[in-house]
Every structure is written in C-alpha cells, then in structure tokens.
Length: 150
Image (cartoon, rainbow, N blue to C red; front, side, top):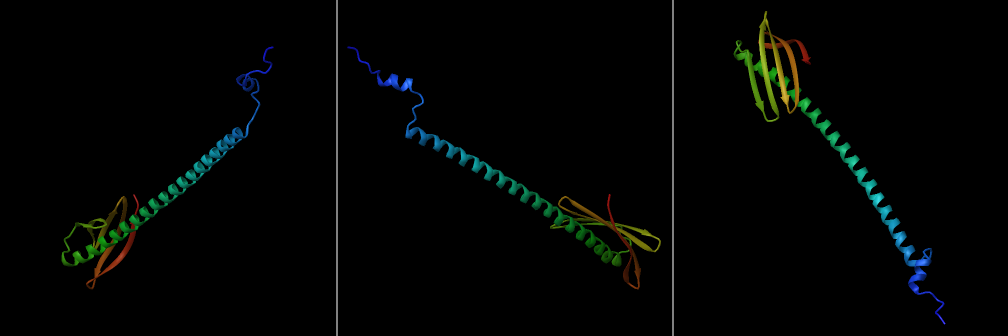
C-alpha cells in the first residue's frame, strides 16, 4: 500500500494560512520598529523647527544690536565734531574707526551755524543723523536734530 500521508514539505505548501506564534512575534516587532521610526522622525522635525526659530530670533537680535550701535556711533560722531570744531572751526570732515564700527562725519558751514552729518556703521547696519549746531558763548547749541533715512 502506498503511503496516504503527504510529505511535510507539501503540507506546508498546501496550508499557507497556518500561522505560528513565531510569525506573530515577528510581525509585532515590525510594527513596533515602524512606530519607533515614526516617533523619531516626528521628534527630529520638532527639534529642527525649534532650532530654526531660535536661529532666526538670534539673527534678529544681532541686527537690532548692530542698528543701535550704529546710531550710538553716529551720535558719537556729532560729539566728536563739536569737540574738534571748537579747536578748529575750518574742519569739514573726519572719520573714526572703533572696535564695533566706523563713523564718517561731514561738516558744512551755512550762515552762522554748522550742519553736521554723521554716519555710523556697525556690521551691516548703517544709521545717519544730521544736526544743525550753533556756537553760543563757547558752548554748542543744537538747533535741529534729525535721523536720516535713505
């Protein structure tokens, strides 16, 4: 008589829906790995967003600081012009280089007063002011002050 039981290889091939505990364990490990990968991707995206926001804010603060420094440099240029005009009324321009920037000063004599234009540069920031000054009793009187925008 012939053997009525099929070989084991044929049984496995004929019964593809047979699921073992080992198969279930491997499938759940794959889902957990996928879940962890998605979680890490989400956290990396949130971290990158936080970094970009902080970097943008840092650049804005740096530009604001440079802008204020440029304004203070320009005002210092006017004070420099006052000090030097007292000693030399024929002075018409000057330039100063400092650690945090540079100042360029232009002086024009108009009537009995001086028009002092001072430009302060700090980093990428440029601020320019103009003052009309008059010397009264050996002290400077500001007739007008204006910040120039061009």
